[in-house]
Length: 367
View 1 (cartoon, rainbow, N blue to C red):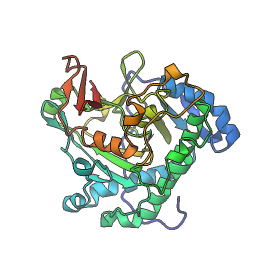
View 2: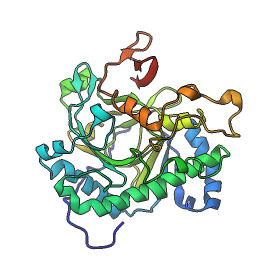
View 3: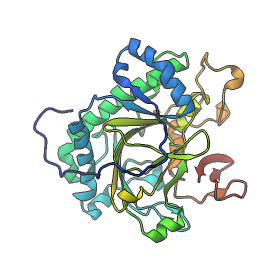
């Protein structure tokens, strides 16, 4: 991060972690300090790959950013929501419904959650290049150098090393997946801040306290900066929803649909959802910081040839000749989530719903 004098930003002060005795997910904590060397990555690969094939989520314990630097990123992320007038925010609205891109601002109540209830969270997604064609609200402009450094850190230091380790787990050259994630290539990888606002008790009742339905992410790898308000749950292998516990300055990492396709099912996209926080944290807004990685738009989502996959073990969502590119897939998914009507799977709306277009299963909700 830049070492020069930094422009002031209002402090984002979250509440302390919950004291509720919740059913916590047993997420493996990986010491990522060795990931910067080939020898260290080779040592980490068996453990990381086993975790990402079974649990599907992991916590990275890695003090590459200091606590103050992480706090600063949350402060900057909140600027868009608190220091920019609504009319100006809407001037920077994403082309989500029109073009299938999340770059820019998403207002509250854009998506339908359930029983007519619409979402109560807003987002701001900053393209990883920061300056490359995206215009930002005026209040955010002083922070653009820091946001660029933050994107570079996530892309090169965190994402690329995760991708190298995942390639090693498939007995592939380290750069197999890295080459599909160019920083300056055409693509939608981005840093994003999501601010969840409290809902009415009526809305909580109508949605069974679910704020975002169970789903898998569209891209390849999602990096979440742990924060104290508990709301994220993962679907454990035993079919139970469990809470993700806050760990100071840790990163929570999961696999998305696109990497599942690229790996031929070797790595599974992981199912998660967002729900109402526990009782001692209700009524508070929840700010999250993320880096959502997607392969370059031109990458076709066909399985890589891997010695770790016997021919019969390769799982394909599409026949190779019909497989979409990353750009096509993210547009299909982004233009469907929360915007198009889902239908029950097997007539059981309480469990799963799906969106099918032109015979293609675009999206599935897990309730």
